[in-house]
Length: 404
Image (cartoon, rainbow, N blue to C red; front, side, top):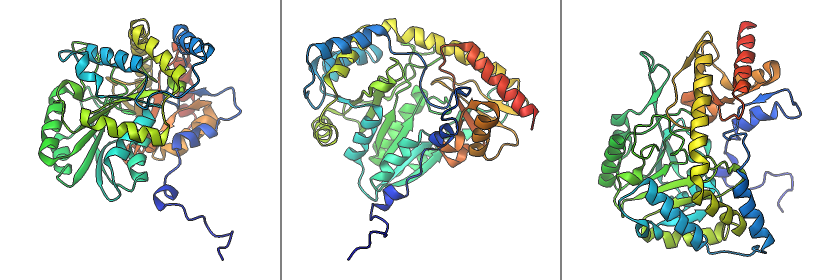
């Protein structure tokens, strides 16, 4: 007879998952309204009214039933137009059969891993990285090989993270099933150039490796050196049948984090298989959320450009203030919504982040949440409606450092 006091026989891959260190820090501030929280990766702006009103109208019309696994035809058409606008030259028909609507970017990434990864497969992940990118293939039994970015220690870009292309090409071999890349990167703000994407794609063609590109922050790009104002995308350099899946989300660029809606861009031969997986994961995304997304895409010019301009102003407010503090190493991020910085003499960043909550009323994410190579770093989400709030946070950090 099985003893009820015995540990439940869950899979080791699940039992060994590490709990979110960001949540661990946030738990230190539960019940405190005096904490300035910058730990989570979302803006504190609400979703625009016209997007919310589209969802309300859908609910009032009684659209509370199942939808197509791959998404409403109207939404997929709007996504095809949107994608062709960002990556022109092929026409909307090119994208129509390559899109799958998912219940959030997280769900889309998990569906991609379920499509590609079997237990024992080797998966190379460029790190530091959002923890889910490592955990999802790990849950499926993959062997994870981190490929760390390197930190520039000298010159005007000191504190920036950069890709060692030779190291990546050496790490990705014919034994590598999937390469996972997030650029613009959470947490570092690192971005890929089109030339680097071409080199990675050419190498993965030779090794037969799939690329899973998390391009959720594509529109949150500040360098302004591309024709469309967005960061360079693998979609700009890939062929239709390349082994490439690109994951997107409505969360960041459309201020829709809580709506849980995303999409995948796939090789057309893969789309039916992903549709089947959606059936067995979530069946479909809610219709009223999809109706809201259609409006977000059709009227995106009213949201995203102003958001990007505001985030750039937030970045340009926060970065100089942090750089002025003693012991801070920080490079200006080119994309995303995060300042990723190192504090001299603060090795255990998880302990530092917890102390900042308790002693300074400041909530930041510990760098070690994104990989061991980021130990000693802290992530500050600067997506704040009020830039004065960012300055207040820096003041709290300054006083805390002075008291050490």
